[in-house]
Structures are given as C-alpha cells and as structure tokens.
Length: 595
Image 1: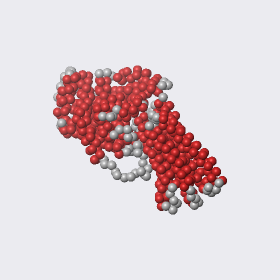
Image 2: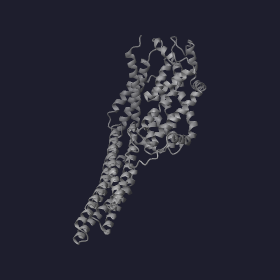
Image 3: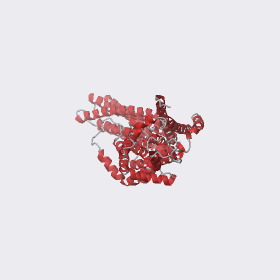
Image 4: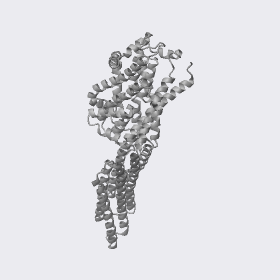
C-alpha cells in the first residue's frame, strides 16, 4: 500500500483536529472559570510555594502551559503580580503541563477514547443550546476533548506505516544512528516542531505516535520532548512583544528557566534517561530502553515486539508511560532546584533587559494593554481596567494644568507652554480613548462569560466619560485664552471663588480615581461621596451664578468679566457631571455583574 499525497494531507488534517480540540477544550475551561480564574491567579502568588501551586493547578485545569504563561505575562503586564511572583507561577506551570501528557499517555493505548467520542459529542453538543452559559462552556470542553482524541486516533491512522512503507523510513533512520549527534538533531527538531505548533502537548502526541510506529527509539523521543520544553516558550514571547517591560522580562524568565534546565539535562542525557527508565520499570514493570534495544536487535520477543517487527500493546503502553514520566521528572527536578534561585533569576532578567530611563509621560503609549495580549480574553479585562486607571490619572494631570493656567498671566512664557501641554494631552486622551475602546471590542469578540461582557459595556462607558473630562480640561484652557485675548482680568475676590469651585472638582476627581482603581469592588462610601460632591458643585454653581448677576448689577466688575467668570464655572460644573457619570458607569455595570 503506497503512501499518497492524500494520506499526507489527511495526516495534516488529523494534526489540525488535535490542535483545534486542544484549543476548544482550553477555551471552554477558561470560559467556565471566568473571573474566578483571574482572581485565583491574581491572589495566589503571595509566596513561592503558593505561586508554584497556582501555576501547577491552573495549567493542569486548562491543559496548556502556553495559555497559563500567557496569563502570567498578562498579569505582570497589568501590574497584578511582581516579576518574582510570576517566576514561581511559571515554574509551577511547567510541572502542571505534564498532566496533559499523562492524559494522552493514559488514553492513547490502554483505552481508545475515540471509540467513545461520538457518545461524548451526543452529550456535549446539546449543551451548547442550553440557556445557562456554564453548561454551554462545559459542552465546548467536552467537544474539544472529543476532537483532541479523535485527532490523536487519526494521526495514528495516517502516519506512514513502518512495515508497509520502508522507503519513507530511510529518511528518519539516517539520523537515528549518530549516537549523541542523533540526540542533538531530535532535540532541535522538538524545538522547531513545538514553535510551529505552539503546543508541547501536540509535540508529545506526535512523538508518541513516532515511537509507537517504530520510527525512533524511546531515547530520541525524549530528546524531542526535551526540545519541546524550549519551543513552548515562543507563545509567551509573542504575547509579550506588545506588552510593557515587566511583561517582556516575565517571558524572558520563562525562556531562561526552560533553556537552562534543558541544557543541563542535555549534558547528562544518558544518565538521566536511565534514571527515568528505571522509574518507569518500577512503576510499569517494563523498561522502555529494553524495548529500544529489542527493536535495534530485531528480537522477536512476543511480549514486546510482534512478529511483524512492530511494538505490542504492552510495549506501546510502556513507551507511552516513559514518555510521560520523562517531562514529569525533568520539570519536577528543574523546579526543586530553580525555585531557590528566584531572586537571582529576577536579577539576571533585569540585567539582560534593563529599563530605559526616559520620561515617556507625554508620549502616547499604552502601559498595560496591547494586541499581543488577546489570546485569553477573560484575562484581558484586567489589563483594560489597569489601563483605564492610567488613563484617568493622565486626565487628572490635565485638571491640574487647567487650574494652573487660570492663574498664569497672558504674557508669561509658561502660559503658552502649559497651553501646548494641555493640547498635547488632549490629543493623547483622544487616542487612548480609541485604542482602549478598540481593545475592549476585540476582547468582546473572544469567549467571555455574560458577566465579563457586562463589564466591558461598563468600561466602554467609563472611557467615554473620561475622554469628556479631558475635553473639558482643554475647554478651560481655551476659555482662559479667549479671556486673555480680550484683555480681561479677574479681581482677587473672583479668583478666590473660581479656586473654591475647582477645589471641589479636584476633590471629586480624586474620589473618582479611587473608585476606578477598585473598579470591581468599589466601596459604597466612595460612591456616596461622589454623589455628595457633585451636589456640592451644583449648589456652588447656582450660588455663584446668582452672585455673578448681583455683582454685575452693582458694578463690582464688568459684564465681560462676568461672562468669562461663568464660562470657567460652567466648565467646572460639567467636569463634575462627567466624573459622576464615570462613577455611575462603575456602579451600575460592575456591581450588577458581581451580584
């Protein structure tokens, strides 16, 4: 039976089905967990032990170390955890990812799970049509689980058979008899394969098939898996490219951890292999290295090698067990050694990627979010919340500049400098509004729980109101510019009234910032204060409007002075309204989502 191009395309399709199943299963679990997943990662990193356990558990749950390390990069990018905390989580994630290999190993030969896939699909697909979002997400998980093992079964079916297609095996066997050189070749092959697939689980599945088909020995299969340990770092690297410096350092720390550990094991590869093989024999009863030796000697051992030269089911199960044991032992040893050098890791990473000492305050740059952070939509809400807080802090500086410019003489060079800064800040504000809004819309296109979609709706309202505050601050500067062009000056008494109004506005702004920083759980006292401050601003505006008419009628100052005075007071009152709108956006959208 010849191996045709159709068979090869079918093999690619089987690999794609496997990867798609892994993706759907992972996303289904992320969606079920929703905010709980974000809270766990945000809280359980207070020391190295809990950080390691968090990384291990989360990775075991979502079946992807790449996804969990992207989450960690996202949280560091969002300022929820330090670089040192993220290292512990990444260490744990590398151990947690071995759970996937055990699942694949356990089901690959002992139980043909694909035989039951149709039954599981019969359960999973109807769940997609249920009203409750949790059931829908569980249905997605079951469907992904089925696709994963259907793909694995199809890979085994369409991989070229050793006995039927000996000419195709010549390519592989040319590189399996080079001693330690073969180990290096397959090590680099594992790196490239995992980088392309962006999944160490996919690499493990393919390696398992290659070993079971007799393409490569057990030791060379372990070399591929060891290389995959480095290749899997490509995903968080890509995710960190548009992140901040802390995110890039986290990705670099992940690279260092995996590369250093892999190189150490590569240097002691054969002793380490024998150690893993002994553990496998103790647990499983069969030494996978003995199977490789029997293959090479072409021994017809009925318990290991079938009459046609292939592996028996017992031998396949032993190889699968050993291949799963290898990354488990490797990552566990790596963790137990490296966890004590977390601080040193942080210093090395900071030395490799030093901070650039630049004042970027007046340059447009999003601090916490970027397009590279969109691989786990539930988690990107945190980045957006942090970015909104930065946005509000930038606008607060605009309010300070607006207050300052009211007191600056028209002929003062600082007046023009402050006006230009306000204008630049207003342009940056418009761009931040657009970028954060676009980011939130992209996140909303991902797999989100209904609560998270509600939060995004609230955040879109909040950034719109913050942008209105920025416009109002610049309107104050434009009002002062018109006042100076008309050569109007305020008396000390009028300036005192203006300062009183803007003191209230600044106080309302500070209160609003506190609420934004605690967006998910704002204190009721802060909400009440926001309403009280807005009421005070309105009352003072009404009082000043009445007194302004009285003062004009009594010739305390001219009509033109009164017009410009009320312009500044009206702008201040509008700023108070916008600030209350922000608070109401937080109150209604986020509190309702939490209930």
